[in-house]
Length: 307
Image (cartoon, rainbow, N blue to C red; front, side, top):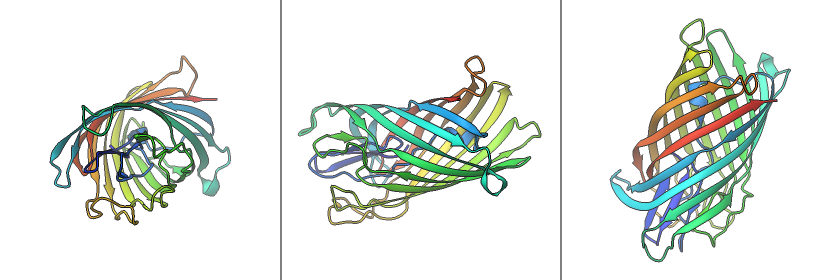
């Protein structure tokens, strides 16, 4: 998974992805980027013209971390319930003969962290508001495949606080650039293969002299349309930090870049009884490899309703 950092006392740093959460005690823990993996690895095609409202409900859990060697170390018992609200608009007239759109999102997270008596930290239960984002999208659909490109901005204006042990806001701005494609192996578009590459770079933090290193996230998956209303498949992701952190407040070994790989099943269920075009995505990822990174699980549920 991707984007969670936890610092226990001054020596232990634990990283988990996908949450975007940052934990810190007396020393700043290693920050990670904003970008989170999602359900698009089972079908990277763009939405048709129109307006959509999405509610994503990721749930994260972990109790282990990894060293630079990949060896496991014990961590706190951590659970997080995240809510992301997203509005998508796809224009009726796209650019360059394709489909053009944008989306805006806001997030919040409730976290429960039990440090199991690890001084000086106490168990904490926190509600944290994350950084809003906007993303611009351009895509093209062909008979056998679809391709799209995206550019996103995460504004580091959430309620980050040094006084809290956990924050969903990042305290820096991020920019991500994505290229993704889907290929259908049959004429009915029942069986698909998808691949996405996302590059993320960030500004320096506002509260510390730290500029997080850039990262690259690869997501791949397949999906099979078992019935007109049910698609079942699987996804795999890999996130790698590819440039070093910088700044005078960096308190960890800059050469120890983080990375992780996870895998799991994925499904999409159409909900025509609610409204034509409505659906729910349900996915589960389990980390199978990590370095300088926590190992955990994420269950991802996302509802989408056109209007």
